[in-house]
Image 1 (cartoon, helix red, strand yellow):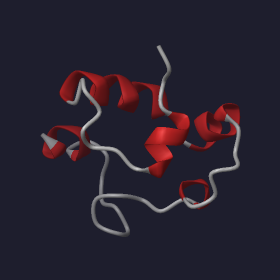
Image 2: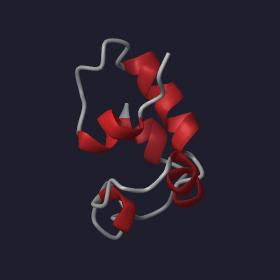
Image 3: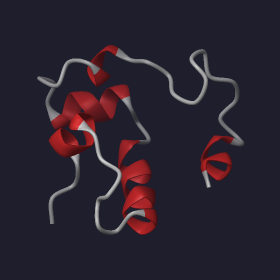
Image 4: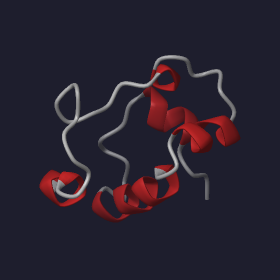
Length: 68
């Protein structure tokens, strides 16, 4: 499945993920996160389809995940 999301995105400097300062500093607002990661909402929609019962989580996801 990961190949589906990375096939068109080109090479990544750290393998699968690109490191960005907001990933390590969770004090950013949701608007700041979305400016830094313009594809955040699309990625979270895809994650919700693939992992509907948030089994695969981390602090970034828990902080900024969409609330229902």
